[in-house]
Image 1 (cartoon, rainbow, N blue to C red):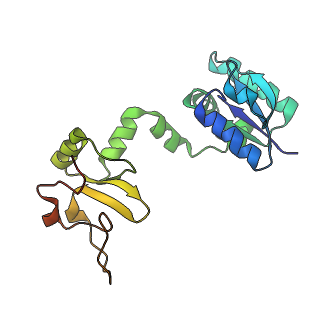
Image 2 (image 1 turned 30 degrees about the horizontal axis):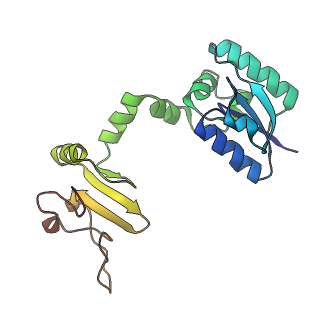
Length: 194
């Protein structure tokens, strides 16, 4: 049977990964620095004490464990273990088992300033949740199109309506569906903005 090792099982992401992989029929092993809720999951067949020391000791532990267990998949659930795996070369067997995104993408995602710089280069931001007053003010000042409460085909346009074109429709649009014309925004405010 194929087995997956989920690192950082003490995190919510680790617990979700274990449950999801278990539902798909994989045998799952959980690793965590401390006892955690995931260790009590019926989907976990083995539990391991994960070292959180410097990368060399962690990677030696992981290599030894993988040599013994022959994992099909290794899931780094948090930045803690992901950073350790990123210290390895791209062609390392542990990196291949972790099925990681390209290194440049991960490094950008893990660097808060690089992520912010990348986000500032995107003129349209979409969120499933709402928008704060400060977020609205900043978006309007720097010219970012802000779309909030986006679920399916429905959303609220808060700023930057000039960037969107409304799709032709044979029926009137329900509240929040499709783009609002800039004239409907009233000084950059979209429906639902408080």
